[in-house]
Amino acid sequence: IGCDQTVYLYAFSYKYLFILLVVSAGIYIGNCNEKIIINFYKVTFYTLFFLILWALFYFFFLGDITSQAIAARVSFPTISYKLSDAHLYSFCLSILLIFYFLVMRVKLMHAKSLSLFIFFAGIFALFLTGSRTGLFNILFFIGAVIVRLILNRKINYTFVLLITLPFF
Image (cartoon, rainbow, N blue to C red):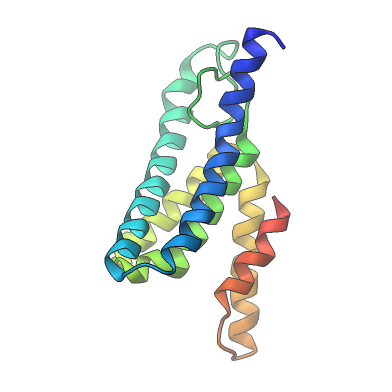
């Protein structure tokens, strides 16, 4: 493997490691006190907020750079922007948006106006990725919530999150 390919391999694999670490941290903090759990939600919220801001920055500011220097679709911050990982970015952003809607906004006691702003900014960022993966996750989640509300049952959010994961 050449030097450039090795760098791409490491730069691409850390994103998958990030997902594994977030899930592992979520399982670990389940046994912790409330303060640690709230701190985990705050870090996760800041990650979501950063991903939304990065999508806007990438699309509107880095998009002006010649198309040969970077990929046209929004990607994670890496060493090189020639390869796009828009599908993974879109998936992570959508899962974080769903987690925000279900858990974080309640636990962090965010106002409805802030929650709506984050949700719609996140949807806009999903459109900027150019990937349908995240949009499908969000639409599937909204559809599941509507069906559960129509059936007048209590929504099992864990089930909805687990259902959307295989669509990555």
